[in-house]
Length: 151
View 1 (cartoon, rainbow, N blue to C red):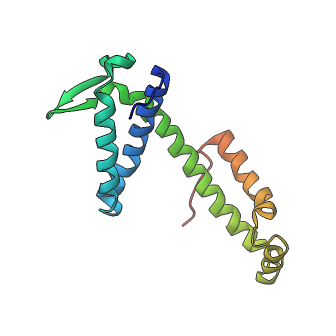
View 2 (view 1 turned 90 degrees about the horizontal axis):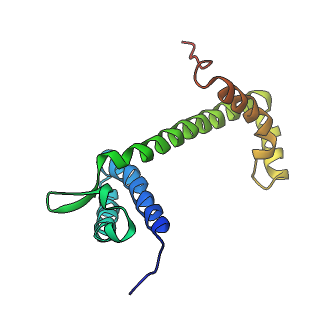
């Protein structure tokens, strides 16, 4: 089989594989060994693709190590920056959702929440948005600087 892609599409594909390996790699080590199969699949695909790095103008980004082709460490900098931004956003998103739900439940009885859920076919998002917006705005303005835990 032959697939025609541009150099930019090739680079995008390599980046996507690298990002997925940053996710599945730790999951295979820390969460569950079942993810190791995914890591192996990703590594096999990447290995095949990296054989063509020169054809797509990426020869300087690839090195051989232990008999396999790998992306050079210096190539990871941009990917790590992107993943850092994603991690921050995801952390803010998770904290925002948890705190908004907590505040929503504090302001509404179980019966009210049940009625809202029934009215919206189980979805509370519209009703919770004002609660979320407060935290989104806080994180956009101040990051973690305003986040404290009272003990």
